[in-house]
Amino acid sequence: MEEYRHFNKKIEVSNLGNVKINGIIASLHKDKFYYYICDGAYPIRVHTMVGRCFPEICGEYIPNGHYHHINHNQLDNRAENLRCISNSEHKRLHQVEDGVSVAVKAYDKNGQFVGRWDSMMQAAEATGQGDHRHISEIINHPERGRYTAGKLYWFKEDTPEEEVSKKIVQIKSTMYQRVKKKVS
Image 1: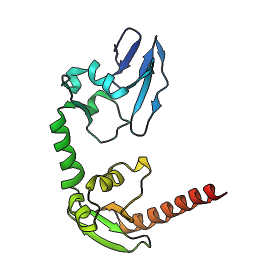
Image 2: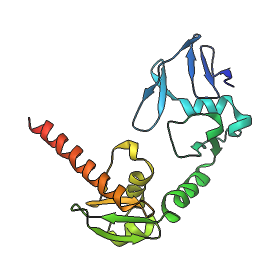
Image 3: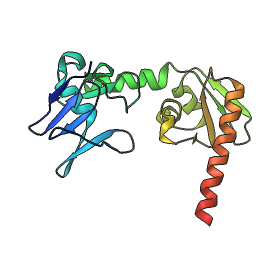
Image 4: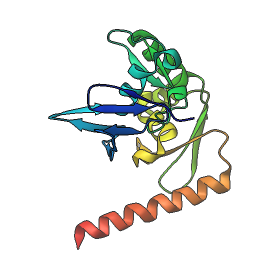
């Protein structure tokens, strides 16, 4: 059941991540990662408003903390998907979730298998990436449109081979179309 609460005098936010300004449903803007609204000159992220208005679900606000998206979908701003955590806990969570426990495999530009690693950190180190977050962005956030890191295509280890082949062909086609548009 959707419930609205006041964020400030003119902005209301719901437990489902919807926003009203002066009683009218607001259209949300999207930056690279998050939905936000503009309140005067300042953008306000929707998940921050939801977290502040529903502390019994998201947890009490922690100064200099973060509202972490539990399911890793940064556009899913339902209160039940948000949890307020400290900076150090947020960093630790992402190291575990994004780099330590996810097995990955890589393919070269020709679609040839390069290798498999037990974690993104190991993969980054073995392939000279230096930082596992580049691989993590590809694996965990495909909606951001990044396809390669270190000239390799990255997939979760359990991705079926036929899906890998289809995705590489699709990525190459998309990249070709982008280059073609720039040239013309």
